[in-house]
Length: 182
Image (tube, rainbow, N blue to C red; front, top):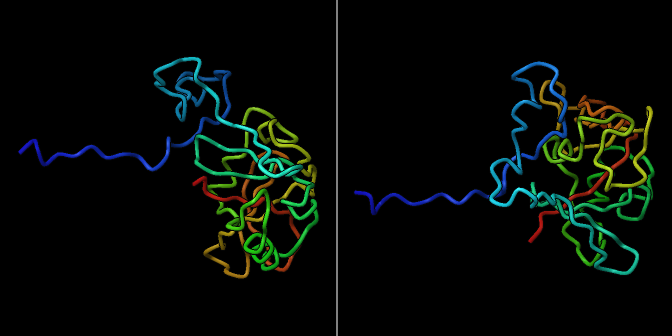
């Protein structure tokens, strides 16, 4: 009977930590610090992000927690030069993007984009390895996820203070493409 039990290999390393390290109440996020890096074999093996320049001048960030690759610079060619666009054009831009030697980029879903957020900082609330993040009201980035209750809207993530909301798909927001590391 035991020979039929097989180990299940996870598809990724799991959800990343949020970044909160200060305990405000016993049992909060910082108490447990659940997420990637928890129970690592080597305590100092905590490198989540790796910066790579695959094509000259086109720098990407490899996220070892999620298995995703993203452009490093939010105002460079990989992110539509930091320009805003409507949701439909954001999807088209990402699908047609040829950046850093790859042509299989896409607009991330809401869960993929929120993993860029570092919840222990504000303005911007993004891990500091990423550069040129749009802040203030212009800090909104489209996701590929449609808002279920009103399908004329899509989810966006605000990098000002790490929150998700929905907006009409015809409005202008920034974009930050993603691709699966393969």
